Length: 501
View 1 (cartoon, rainbow, N blue to C red):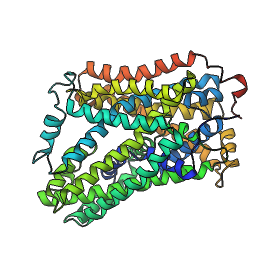
View 2 (cartoon, rainbow, N blue to C red):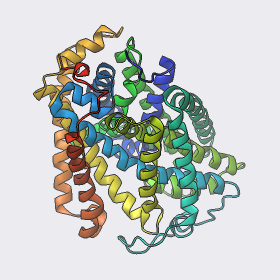
View 3 (cartoon, helix red, strand yellow):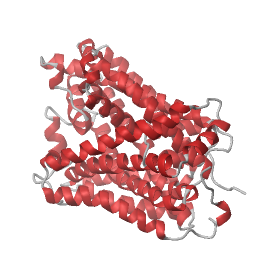
């Protein structure tokens, strides 16, 4: 008899899955990636990547979680005793990501307050690095804790862990049912207002104008696959964990399509809003669009405050809506990331959810304080780059290769998904996972390794790259393998183990 927690409704699960997929990267990464890789022409490789990698892997992970009814380590163990380490590897990648992700949300919380009276002044870059982060001049110097970052960081963790303590249906589902519709409404207001600004048309023209020559550039296709992969929360145990809480009768294939297209729809909405605002900024400063285009932290905490400074009337409202959007998008993703190792710890060590939340949450909170120091931004930048490029992407590659080529598991998983779904997948699904995805992810890995061997990422010192980058990536693999050697408690007995059909 199964006593596993379950989602209260299909809508609740979809909101949670969309909440995990829609994160900070949708708002601050996608617009710049699209612009730099062919503008409107980028949407063709992007859509192709969504249909041949994004949605197929979503279906794969939804099916594994639903069929084997466990956290990532337990689900992979039930699939094959030789695969448990892969589950722990993905869980530990999530653990690393959550430790710095929470810090970025803490910055967004502060900037929501700073929006009242545009407290960042006329030099948002100096305000961010000097006043808010108190950034040390030399990378690698950790320095002291920055109280102004620590306080909102602890608040973020308190909210996230309380929601996780409340459980799947009463905590995660309820939060996402509120946060995701609110996020969409807030961002729609931002987009509508941005579209009325002087220069918005020039910004949108820059965003959508297609450079058809780029279609022939392999790097553009790799960028499309990279964006899909990193924005859909695939490859690091989230979707697998979430789907393990689905009822036995669940339309897995349709859920994957809805989640995938909802995530892409929000990315497109974000692109429109961001570039309308960038067009306005370029017009105000009398410079070309390409001089104001940024991504990541620079876009969110330097460029957007500069835009808000120029905003005609009620600039505080625009600022509050934008930074609250970052908080909401970040929180729904953070909670999904933390849930992966909460579920893994709970099942492996046979402890209560409360104990798993307290121990896992405490460990993550303590480590996250490293990024709230004077040298925190440098650490964050390196860890984020390496854990995504050599953690998430590599784990995703290993996942599809093991299942498709070594365990020969695609046929059994496809049958499981098709038997309970209205929409049935055919040969395209297996071909995408067995051939297209491994080829593209394999090339991405090769290219990333080549680039990093040629020169250090962002010119950081080799010692810092080795400790904050390479060592962290290696540690999650080694610890994952070690954890897989520990036996399961008595509640996971041999009768529960299932093999891939």
